[in-house]
Length: 263
Image (cartoon, rainbow, N blue to C red; front, side, top):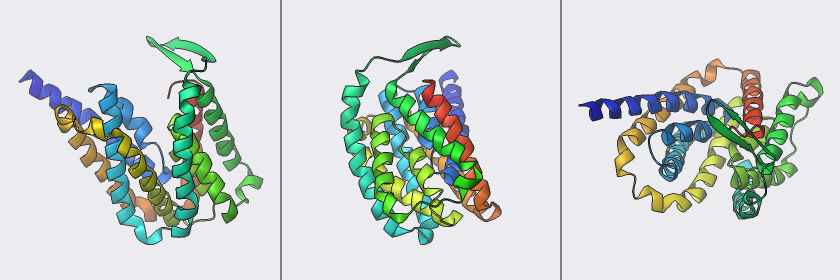
């Protein structure tokens, strides 16, 4: 009985986190994986948590894409998404060398030690710059020319492979691309699915052994999909400026977390 109650509690905790993360991610274009993976890691081994997160991210992204597919700017998906895939491979390869680089510093809180690495510090500073620029009137008038999309995709994929933050950098570029809010959400979802399909292949061996975590995984999938559907219903009730501000605020939070070694 205790084991049954424990499994229900684990599933409920992960489901609440997945619902909130999916709703946030629907509008910002990033955050689901970063928020959900630590929740999974509370109850299953880290390799399984990473594989489960990737699966939820892909399934949720696929449903999100299906709901907003008519708004996707497919030329941008090609111009941004294909370089992102190439960049992700390059970033993952470089990670082998960067991971061996000495940490810049460490600090402790609530019984945990946090490590500040060069890669995360660089990405954190970059994200903070994007976020601060969003609040500057002059910067808000700047749209990203289409010729820069391949570079944005390459950087997004590269830092995704290097530090797991491709969604945040993608959103930082696309939110200033002159899209409507529907185009922003749909195009970001299509690019995310393209990258997810690529990286999920790496986790296939881990996915074969996820039977013990099936209840928690199922709860997370159901809750994440509910958050995505709820986001679709709320999409017409929010303004583009509200989405832009939300992206900027969450970018700042992610930047601080990365630079401090928390994420």
